[in-house]
Length: 391
Image (cartoon, rainbow, N blue to C red; front, side, top):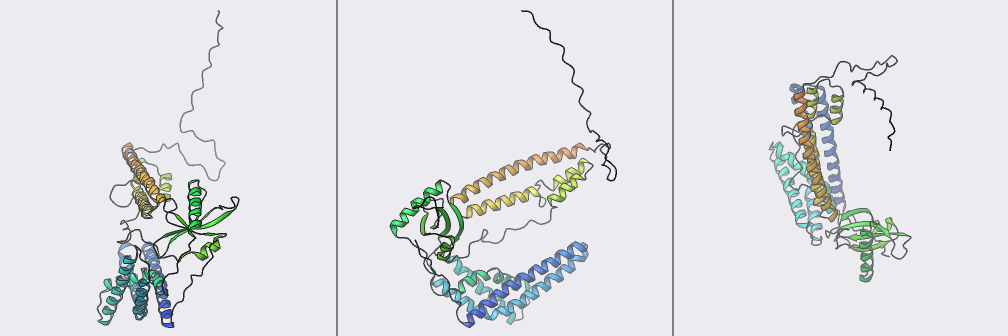
């Protein structure tokens, strides 16, 4: 059995601890100010008309940005030390695909801090550029902290002797094929390996379960076992430190479509209260995709596309299969969209109104017998008596 290790590290000198505390405080306060301002804008939009809320919204956003600028000013003296710590940590990183990108992120943080410092020293009122610097440091605070707290190279991960590794790896592939593997958690280590904690039947005691730490995609031939443990706690204590995962859209967040669409619950309620077919057509117009703003089916297609992209970006066998299935659902969504569009046109052309005999039920009286909306079926005619046939 692999023995657990201690992966804890030190946080450095008092100056480093002060810088890390300042970074954590900045990220927390930036998010708090952002949330408070967003809530205030939402309340203004809900309680005032369009001409009034525009000016009030601008004032709220300006105050929001001013407070965040003050918070960044408190962090600015610590940025040089934080960047230096991050660069030192990167020098100790093993060679992996993500290291080049991490170096660029640290360079970007340094450029943002230098630019913000230049704007503040020269009293240049370039609010939009300054705002971008503040957002960059808030978004990447965790990434920078994870580097800045490191002391020396990352500790090595668990390893089994070659014979034991081959034995347990073959067993892991076998139980995965038989769907007898339970996945606890997955992460990437500093070497860029996908590390997964799994539970499988014990190789030596089949009636008992044990915990394995494996490297690689659990559905690929490259999966190999790094360690075997009796309990989940032992396995988690021996795991290599997790590095920050990647993002789905490296060039930026997925752009939101302009405008709003009523929730489906409101549309269902609107249908329940409708009396004319035109009202149903108006509701369906919020559902089908027509390119004139957000619609529920277009949003569903966007959601499926994002899920499919994410599944594919995991670079695993299961992720690729899931991405194909989600793309298939997108095709079905397109078919549903076309069918609903035909239904919308039919409702528009029908010009139908509900008949007046469909009256609401009384609320305070004993309900009368229900009024049938369709005539009852005619009584079945009695079958003529059968006459026995003579042979």
